[in-house]
Image (cartoon, rainbow over all chains, first blue to last red; front, side, top):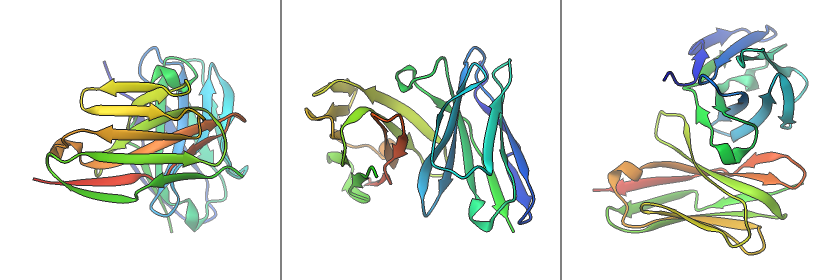
Length: 114
Length: 110
């Protein structure tokens, strides 16, 4: 079956713009989590959605937001982009909320802010 | 705030040697997850530990959760070149916040 699909794979944006990233989970998976990965800060948890509800949230400013649709697809939005938002953004899906179900990651969207 | 320390940051081993990475928390944890990320790849979920003193094995990998639920280890027996990558712990403190360790980068010399 198809894995976790993230689009686009690469993105270049200008400081001050906003960006929307998309994640399609594995069929049947209802939980989607988002992560930011940078060389300096490493992997950081952004938020988790399950059944269209945000279940958990990391320590990121309000410029970072997300949502989940009824088909479990998820989007994350970053407004007023800053240079420091340049990162690999990963999403992961799971059958249900909670880490004991195992998470499958997508290949990520590499965002560059110039 | 919660501190999660993962050590060592880098480990270079000869193929066939053992490898261990440790994840230590300043607070008691609800559970801990381990991931592996190959160079240029994305993280792959390995396992979750929940119970105090829990030990789980996956072939050559042994995962352990400390009795006080403040630390965990991942041990690889007889490393192979396919084990190369960065190993991360992700902790869920009792406040529901998820935090990653900085990762241990493993290189294996054939």
